[in-house]
Length: 111
Length: 289
Image 1 (spheres, rainbow over the protein chains, first blue to last red):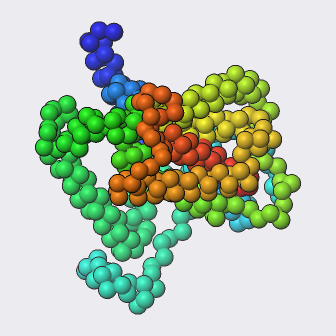
Image 2: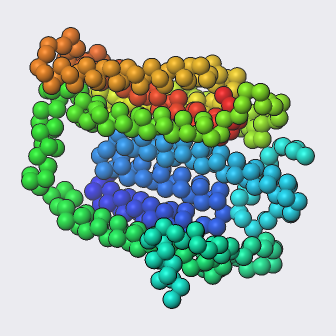
Image 3: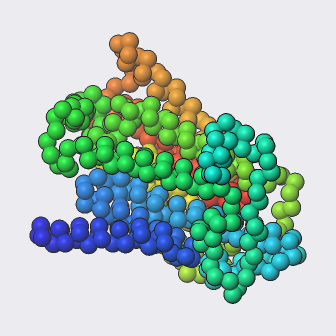
């Protein structure tokens, strides 16, 4: 790869990084924001690779793009469940405008 | 002025003792209502709440300003700066000779800076302990409730996992064991292994992942790995500081069995990291092992 192409790649990756960072913090729905955050980590790991630190690239790809996304997702699901139980106990209707809805059915029938 | 009075009270710790705190208005959930922003919330809360926000913003601004000032005082990226980087040059010049590790990053974090890595491992241990304390269900709790997020019937996930899980495991073990020779090391390899076990657990259920990590193995592996790290590094620190001959040699740099304690320490850190990842995932998902 020629140096110009590398420069273009670097700059486009950095732009993508900034876009992903801003988007993940201003997005209303939490699960899409989480996916954007994961993509931020993926771009970051490529940038670590270009900055010649493959150690950090491996760690960022495994932790940032893999495990932390899963853990955030599990935490969101648990929050959703707690909220639902609380609302059921309270007898109010669930507020629909919080944005944790993700289309993933949870097949739990709790009375 | 109410804000000033509240600030004085806040300084003398008796803000909530004198008067009842003004409770915020209950927020009505309404589909037609406009979205509740932080400004709405601020308007509904008492002045001392506003004070907390203001103080938080000021603290963050001061911290950010200090950090930016520090960074702007550093030499530019890529410039030569001997006056700041003497330690770096020392490491790069003599690191392989002293530690026996070809990958100088592993040499630094597990020999020169081994104490920091021990602290990081204990941070992970504390994190998983806190998650266990907060989320774990009792043994006698009803275990017949269905798992609320079950993906084991998903054919796409199962086929994909079947294809890539062996590759993930082999890559993780390679990164773990080759940490002193090639990029990687304990933390990276452990994270890759943990991600692989999480994928296995979510695709094939806990019967499959239980072959790798049960609660018993989790307990034994985490504790013994941390203990081994403590004992091994205490030994090398003691002998190194007092100039005592050790039986741990550096070997020939480049061999798989070289670099003193770095290889076993890498394995220990990797096991702790993998178990921690899986433990936190498990606690969030099922609230039990």
